[in-house]
Image 1 (cartoon, rainbow, N blue to C red):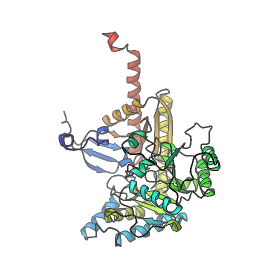
Image 2 (image 1 turned 135 degrees about the vertical axis):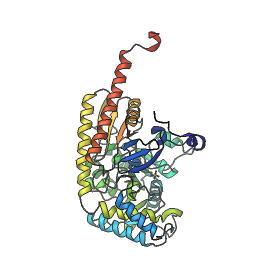
Image 3 (image 1 turned 90 degrees about the vertical axis):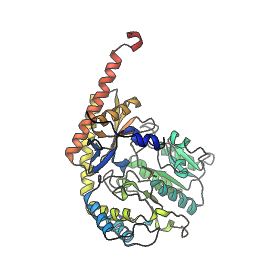
Image 4 (image 1 turned 30 degrees about the vertical axis):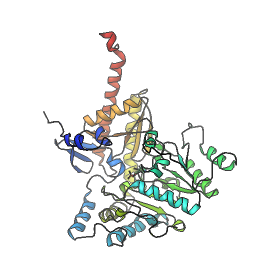
Length: 437
Ligand SMILES: *Cc1c(COP(=O)(O)O)cnc(C)c1O
């Protein structure tokens, strides 16, 4: 009999705001690759990957090696936004491995270490350069928890947490929101053309090409291209938030490469440092870089340990097409297994969605997605739910996971859904308890 996890200190001292620990109620101690190990010595396959912050797995060796070497040699850890060797190396690697090969030209802004910092900065600069105040966002979009980011986020529970109005943003239907037959951009384009639509011309639109927290909603290539065209015709800036689905999650480095977009502003964070070390940037079209020095600021913009691991990640994983191809192959495996699960449980699971290594199974009843996640945890797998009603079981493994571990994780997903289906059948066939008694 193993001991219960020792969570007393957390329950006594940590705020009620804690959340993921409620889905995964144990105390983790070690991690490596696709595995997390708790204090009881139990290992879990990680299909959550730090919500997309650990695309290269836990403690990837080439990054750890670079970090250890940097620490041993007394490299600068904190530097505000002063020039350091580590920052130069990151910038040069980004140019050489990511921007130049894709024909992209951007200035790099370091706005502070979290994703929401990058989103706030992108909104600020879009408003500054256009002189307009409004921003268009999309249903089910998620962009972070500070006020500006919340104003362009769909989720009502998160928005309510602001306890102030969230002005200067208009939410419009994302691709697919009104069913397969409707191109939701007819509405946006129509409203822009109509002088009585009540939609003020926005400074920018902000979107995820694959909505991650919002339930793994994939925008079609045609929709994305049309959105870019509409925006450019109306002189509206495009902000593609690639914080969760960038850095290879969908295959290519940027999620928008499949549609050939050239967004004006690109917030990046989560897996950019590659090691879980906090870091974010905004990529800014050079002619839009209208910041005055220090106009946006922050103490932790010079987190050099993150620059070191980010540069190492670009060197190690983005020198060729291997990772992109691996994501495509592993993504196909997930798609195939999901199709089998969908076929085996019609009625319980209604749809599969996704791209590359972000994929989801949609449950008819949201509570069954939660039950499947809990059943998976009991069987040694971390997997989260997403979507407006938490109805989507979302697979987000490290991109570097080996195929054997991927298959074992997918087996656990299948068995967990099977368990939910079994208890569902038992509930249906058994008369209600009160009648029974
Ligand atoms: C996680 C996330 C953010 C916010 O990043 P934080 O580091 O949590 O502030 C913003 N946009 C998207 C798409 C995200 O997934």
